[in-house]
Length: 282
Image: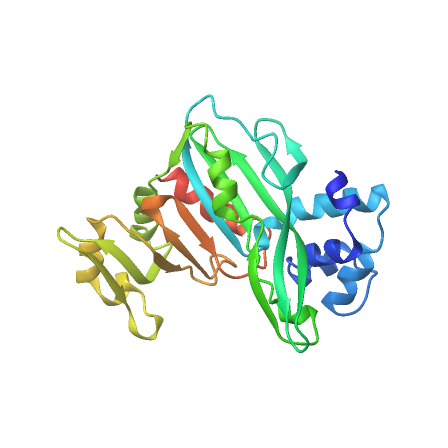
């Protein structure tokens, strides 16, 4: 796993900062301080045992991160990618899942005085196979570059994004975006989730509805709920009761096989459970 070991301390520090503070403290309880201090201390150790521990930490805690998840129906011959653009495989459970680290470079322009620069991140991506599906999970990179500099910063672009990675791994033609409408609607019907905002297809148009005060459509607008049950859903926001999961909310575009977890989740595996429940009922 040279991509992590050969990275700079700052690269490894920024990688660890993608994860919740509580998870970092649980893994390295003897290191005290703020998130930045913990991440720097861990990143400063480039010995093989520490790199192995960091890799294992990434894999075990990725489910707690903010994520963009793309689900594809797969041909039986589809396999896990050996490589991904600008990255490499760092951990594998053969035939089941692989974890990758991708090097992403942001082109930046600093002001006062004017100066060009580059800001780099190591970006965790995990790809999983089930008998029917191919699942690509991207940790969300949403770092504000201004936090790394003491003057105004403009981001001009980056070397690789989700679209580029997905384009390469789907080039074989063995994958197609999964339709998740059935699974989503089953969880909705069972009362496990409720939507506060939805976009859906009518017979002659695409309509959007947003409930006031974040109220659930099924509970407070049964007529709308009945209408959308018979329609393909697009970008829709769902809430999960707090006593059911630490995933309080997620977004999905079921007709295109996309799920987004926009917040950290407190409990390992809770986003895994959401994905599994959708697919099991699909």
